Length: 119
Image (cartoon, rainbow, N blue to C red; front, top):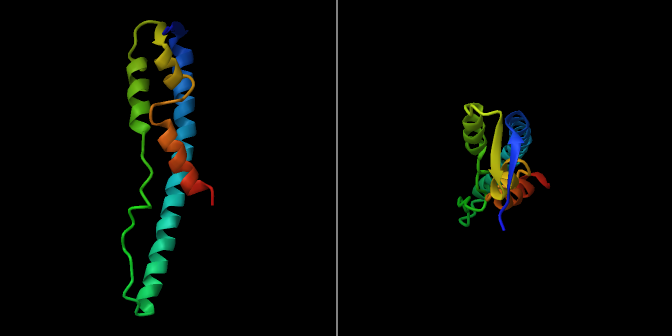
């Protein structure tokens, strides 16, 4: 059974902005890690070129740029900033995303974040 909850718009916006801030810091770390991984790979491949190794591999598909979901936060924050009511109703799914910060893409994001920041 799906439930709903009525929350203060201000509390909701505070939670969303806080979640966005956490995500933004994680994104910066993940991008830094991604750049480092790409540089290491490129350096290794260039050293093969110096060794005249024909087995140089410039396929970087396994080093995918981290996905940026900032627009999803911005969209929902913008929507609730325009809300005229002081209280809003959230479905159980909305609560999970907006308050608990567990979006449909969260699992994929966690894997990307860990791949580029766990070194």
